[in-house]
Amino acid sequence: MRALLARRSAVLFCAALLIAVSVTFVLRDSRGSAALDATGRRTDDLAAYVAWMRLVTVGGIQDAYHGTYVDTYSVYGPVILYGYEAVGTAYEKFVDPTYDRQRAENSVWPVRGIKATALGWHLLTAVAIYLFVRRLAGPAPAGLAAALYAANPVALYDVARWGQPDGAHSLFAVLTIGLLLCGAPMWAWATLALGVLAKPQGLLILPLVVLATWRIGGRRGLYRGVAAAAVVSAVVVLPFVLSGRFGDLLGVPSTIASVQPSVTANAYNAWWLIFGLGGIADRQSVLDMTTLAGPFTYRLVAGVCVAINFLLTGWLYWTRRAGLAEVAALGVLGWFLLTTQAHENHLFVALPVLALAWPGRPGLLIVFALLSLTIFINMLGASALPQLIGSLAGGRLLAGLRDLTAGLNVGCYVVWAVVAAVRPPAKVCVYPHFRKELPAPRNAAATNMS
Image (cartoon, rainbow, N blue to C red; front, side, top):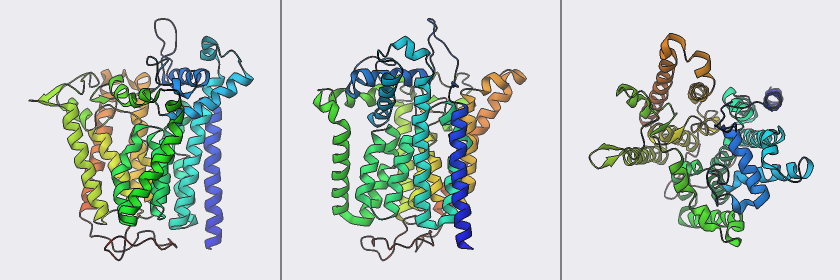
């Protein structure tokens, strides 16, 4: 019976991968938005990716942060841009050796290449989920968990319609947490470094990685992990060092903070609800450096709230009330709700991390389904829904849907955090089929690394 379930699980997973590839192929030439500027040039995210692909192909990766946003300055990390450079090199070799800017903007091939890159990250993430869950919980849950992620409508919309590279930092988040679950903290730090150098959201799991590494290997484990991260980072940024452009790379975080410094950049989170209750019509118009009360700006208050969120998730993990993958996903949700400058797709990384967590605690599948729904509505609310239902009931229908989605996100976090906090500390790993003995934590006989 187990062998039959394992085969069916593998078939289910392969079918989900085929669905992801097929949907991306069908939507290969679609655009997330048809918006144009005054000169007739496209202004959607794919247009920016096309520009960045040409930028790093013609000038090298070291030119990525040396110009002016958007055309000659990217706000994505070098790990993602290396993928764009590979696709751009193929375009230059087989389509247009001159790599003319206008011709590239009007060609379908750069967009197809960008979506192929996004699909590649997505498929690798699904494979990583399958392999880790198979090792931790057995083949049957592995196929289901990986299939539900691979063929998730949110992921397919993100990849096939928008061409977003969210799979990049999602992949490295899954690898980092999975390696820690398997007792390999040094390699986890290496993949953590790659995640941070893909997108800044890779830093969201850093506090938990520190705690988990200390639990597994103590001070020596931390030293080895940091050294591994430093080596990997040095290899990635070497072109910037050799070209004298390392300072440009260091300036990326401040540039990102200045691109869209709104309290909420179309994220249906706690700030979205607060502004709605306060009667603010254009909720994206409030800048995060605006004074909230006295000397406290929105950005400062949000930073304090996010820190409290990470303290909570760290406590839940350290006291064994929740496993590593679960608290990582909870922490991402809390960050999304409380931070400023969050965008509609910034909660995406919680889904692959939850795919690691719910096979060990099946009730989390409800959270996975709920967040899949809210993220999908949030992404549609930034693209298709305004055209479809924006005029219905004087705009009240769309506004109500957005508020309801924000309320579901907030409610999910509160209920989830309370349920986790009132659990008794676990004495054993919640993955009953995990066959490898984990290293014992310092001064403890057992550990919960799920």
